[in-house]
Image (tube, rainbow, N blue to C red):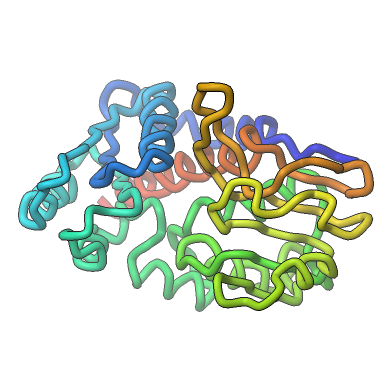
Length: 284
């Protein structure tokens, strides 16, 4: 049984891109327009990661009375900053904000989360672009450990645009890290466990702590736990995944939480940032 640790994957990716960063000059914009605890934890990890590699993180964390115009003005400022090569928009957002309009206000080349319609379209058409880091990280971690998806029965639990749907498209691409048979389960799926019990590879992005147990999966299966959930244990806040690793000896491999997909997601974000910067440098 293999534990698919994210650290070596992260280190490899970062070693390939870090020399393109101008420490103390490059910047990234991060919008945290929510009081969601999990989003706040994620934002903190992004600030820490970018800062570690010499990129100044401008974290915008407005209160619950934030107005649409204020947010759009901040995005415009980031769009026009020549030293800022990436913008992140954390979800969910306050109810009064129109997330779609905020997303589409981003410059496509600064959309390092790959959430604009134009970048998602490039993903669908198999063109080069900036794609959702968590979906990419889920495939990248398997690739690093030599686990191919071609011909595999893959079940994705969760249908968000930036994880479930994007991951499904990636796994349908031609190649050893694609060519999979995909089933996407969601909140309206009847008897989800029945689907995951038959899967060769399970990608869980349902966002509910301990929704599955590792013992729910068949012998030799692989589970990729994409969930990042903040829960209280013995008076302390801890991060756990969607899968409770109760019994894992019968599995072929699994990703831990923390230390798995989330770790690699950070590296993909950094790679997207550098890709954005390199395109700007090449195109002037």
